[in-house]
Image 1: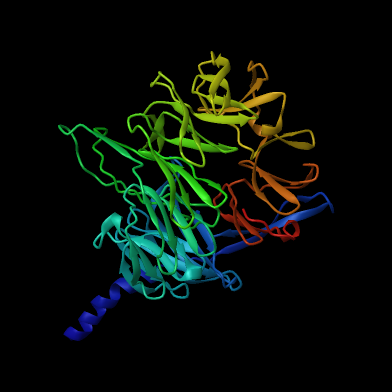
Image 2: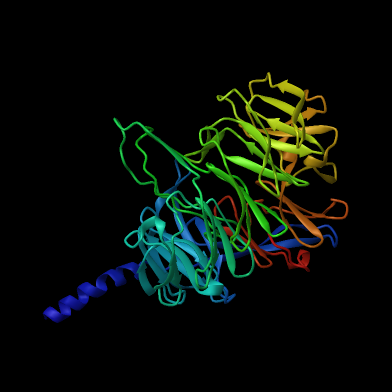
Length: 530
């Protein structure tokens, strides 16, 4: 009798997890737009699950989907912490398995055929066929590489956020480890080739995914200001989710001390990476340097840590220019830090050619733009235009914004405006400048930087994907597919710019939070990267 009772107690959690009423997905074919070339409808398939879809991930077998469902608070339009996760077969319309899911405690990390379930420092790989663990391990996954059978993780009980581990996706065991800091998050991950990643995290680190081999350049890219009389201690955890694949995409967890505003952590006190002829240039809080891609330091120069902040590098000829913005990131937003300055260095030797320091610490550069030899510096409340050269800067003009609107950035090359039947790239308009305000408006200025007005948001579209022949320009409600030859629309559909793409298929939410699947293969004869 005792053995029977023990068996019941052991099996009860599993039974209760999988025994709730099964969700039966519903499918509905619908017309979503028109192909103007043939004057024929574009069609999609709506999939409903009786609960809002939080994420959907087609598995590589092309016959099933991993789906995360999540309830919403109808009164405040906010996600709740309750939901379900499942894998279903759309051919049969049946769920292979499903279970309840508590978003406050767990999350799913999806890449290829890999489903990792993260619960604090516990990491499980789930079998897509039945939802049961293939293995259980310890660690926090930052990035998954199914093609190499590896996940890059930090185990808080074995090395913490200082020791990165390469976890074998077949066994859940660590097969290599490297001293690569992760406490303040990864700022960026890019692939140098098919098997080697370059991670920017308190310096630069190359990592061969399979065996962890690589080189390191350690730098300081954060600062902490603490009122020790009032400080508290807590742990912030968060993940920066990546692009359309829904995978981790180099996102980082943060575990940083804070104390209700008494401890200030300033992050991203570093620059972008500039690649040139097999070398990479990089600036941090304490140094600016050049490195070969085999890890050799070509040159390195000290920077004033009391002045440095988040910075931008660009190279013109044999000169490397550094724009030190005067801000760093605090809790995900810009905050004043350091002192704005612009410096130039000989790209071959690192010799400083000039440095111009701005005296106003309360303001900072929000963005910059280079046109020919002119450098446009945007502040929150004004714009300056300087002619730049290796010898220094010469101010040509300065305009103050008198409309009490704070400026954020110049518009990117991705932004288009549709007027009549033509979609025009705003950044190529030679008669006007366009600036994004902190309020989210696009402001139009003429060449004398006199405010013309706000651009109607209804005519603005983002270039979110390109194939060999077409651009996909979308906003929150619709997409125009335009020819690259003349920017004229060849198709229109209700698909928003927040669409996710897997191969030739696009997925987006309807207002009821069902998901629509659209096959766009007729516009993707020659595939391009997103």
